[in-house]
Length: 138
Image 1 (cartoon, rainbow, N blue to C red):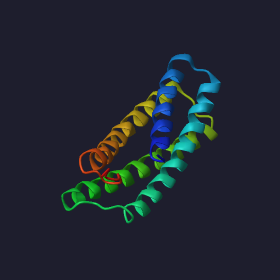
Image 2 (image 1 turned 135 degrees about the vertical axis):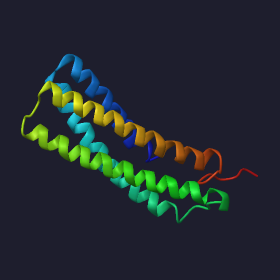
Image 3 (image 1 turned 90 degrees about the vertical axis):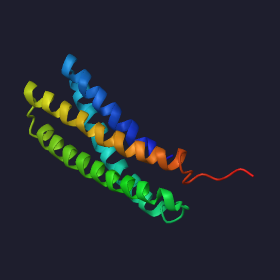
Image 4 (image 1 turned 60 degrees about the vertical axis):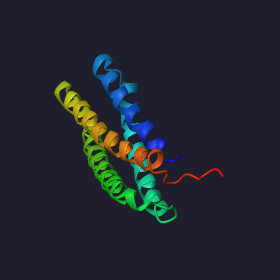
């Protein structure tokens, strides 16, 4: 359940960032920054809990490669959005709010969603194809 929280926060942040490009409202700009910070923190917690959870579930032999890829992509996504959020926070703090920078930040956030989608796809495959983390009903 925990994994869905940062996914929702990141996607919502990118969507609001797009709306900010259209309407240029301060509350949108502030909301986007807040959501990215919360998402980065939630992503770290989720990543760490996932690392711990992998030891408590049964991973079938044919799913081990997928589990390894999922772990790798989760780390790439965490690092990407952590660095992205740090840069974004720096620009926010410095009040560097030019149109070109806003477009570049949006596109960079959108690119991060591709990492997020790959990670989620691998996680979904673990659950729905291999049954990792699910209980079998007798």
